[in-house]
Structures are given as C-alpha cells and as structure tokens.
Image (tube, rainbow, N blue to C red; front, top):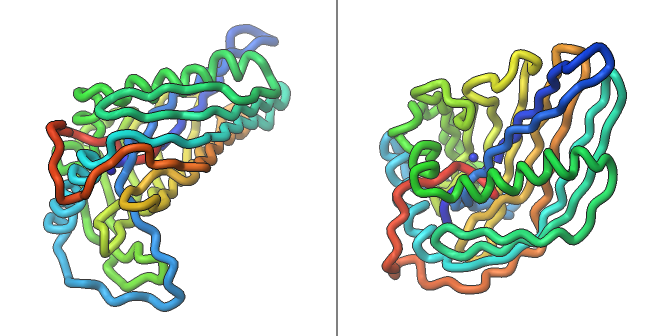
Length: 275
C-alpha cells in the first residue's frame, strides 16, 4: 500500500505563556501507509540488480501506487505514549485506539483506553487523530508524498541486508515544509517499499524546539507494508525532552485484491510513511 508517516512523524513544542504557565502543542503528520517490506532471512539476500537513484524512486512510486490501489480496507490497534521530562515538571499520557481504514480516504478511530494527563489526551492525542484524517486528503497526499516532486534523492548504499532493506536513500525536501523531512529511508529490494525512516522535520515548527529526531519502522502484512513503530524525540530549548511513541499492532486486512489487478481508484500521492 502507500506510505503512511505515521511520513509518521511528530513534532513536539513547548511555548511559555507566563511566568509559571506553559502551553504544549504537538504537530503530527501521519505517513500514509508506505508499502514496505522487512525480510526475516538470517543471511543477506543478493540484490536483484543495481539501480540508480532515479530508477529506484521510480519503482518505489510505482509499487506504492499498486499496493495503495489494491488495499481497500484494514484495521489495527495503536498505542500512543507521550512523555515529557524537564522544566517545569514532568508530564505523561497514554491512549490506545482501534483504527479502521476504508479506501480511498477514510479513517475511523475508536478509543479503547486513556490514562495520564487529561490536557495531553484531549489536546495532543486528539490533534494527532485529526491530523491523520486530514492527511488522507488527495492534495495533502500529493504535497507530502515521497516522490521526486517533493524530494531530491541520493543513493548512498545498495548493499545486501539480512532484513531485505538493502537500498538506502538520502532524502532532501525541495521546499522547507514542516510536514516534509530530511534524512534517510531504507527500501526493500524485493517489494521496493520503505522499510525504515530516520529523519528530522524539514522545517522547525517552533523556536522552542532545538531538534527533533524521527524513527519510523514498517512491517509487511500480507502483500502490504503498514506502520509498525514510530518514535519522535524533541529537545526543548528550556532543557526538557519530549518523546512520542506509537505502537501499531493487531492488523487485519479486511478487503483487498491482487496487486496486479487495478481498481477504479486512482491514487495521486502518498505520505511516506506510516499510519
């Protein structure tokens, strides 16, 4: 299927309101489901062929679209955890939800459990869910997709890897959009799907954030690559550290068709990564 960052990533900022009070804002953009493949072989498989960066990106985009067209509906469970350590006090919240995706652009969330700071739950986690729904808009997908329209790519490694993630691309956004990122992506050599992303936002969303590191992994479920884990760690200028983690579990493919069978839907763009 297509990349989902769940093009994962989160950016956490802390803004001072007054001498004793602070407001917390979290800007999160989900990776549209990236078609990714993690191998499990104990020995590194040979690469099927040597490719240029342009050839690799072209195949990735083609396969992403093929998987996106084939996946009609799926369901999964997500566990969100947000932990802030630092001045003026530590904060934590957790939330578990079930999510149902229906093609071409619908996500429904049902909250299973909540614990911790209510403000974080009601404002930060709810904003995450709203952002995921907004990310499904066709224009948003096109503008944040992992394609040559939005990024410059450099092939930095094509060595065989035990997990099948043999190609490594350096990605640099063509415009400093806070919903894009710069860093590295790992591509599976068999499915031409994104396996892993290690990056930072292309544009700092707030003065109060010094740096945000994003790590996003995908897992293959049947024919499709879906988000597995997301961790975003932000260093705040006041000395604190905010860590958002998302675990994706219990996937069920509810409806799909063969990858070589085109549906009536046309997918014009994808977020890389996640869900």
